[in-house]
Image (cartoon, rainbow, N blue to C red; front, side, top):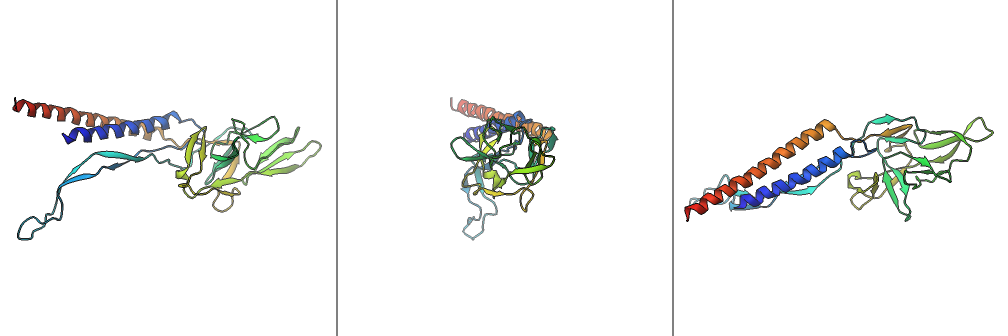
Length: 262
């Protein structure tokens, strides 16, 4: 029976849906994480009686048809790039972007990746780097024995040098945006790669037109809503159970049909 295959596609779809939801919940406290959703479409139909076909010799037209669906398929797990709430940390090197943009990171192989996770530190050369030691771009080196590191909303980094009473700008962080930020490829460690779908990276200055602002001493939290995720999880579980029930019912019907011919 076709119902067996149709229900099986529904079970597979809901299993993937639960995997997406579980990943969202697992990253509830991941800095800069963006939640995903599972998107589905119905499969091709078998048209037993095509709507609009001629119904009789008198030229009447069928107002409705007989279409048997083949089930469901997964077409994507789009990432929702909405703003997460900011959490104050008090750490001078914790930075958050409010609005459009990503921090640009130089990788060991010379390529660039992008992140909303502004948990930065200084390495042994005084460079501002990520938790994995990759330099934030443009590379900024904080002079030894300097103090009072500040980052303004435009991403300008300033410090007070030894023997001075006034701060001095030592570098400018840029912010990178994309035409389709949902088209970025997640590669783990809170990093993304640009793809043909995302469009080319567009570097700019924070707080300028089209770019977000930088907030020092704060981190962007994940945009995961626990209540919404739990509601979606329950709905996915019920949908899975109903598809399993369809398989059970179809199996019983097949057994009954087989018994008629014994």
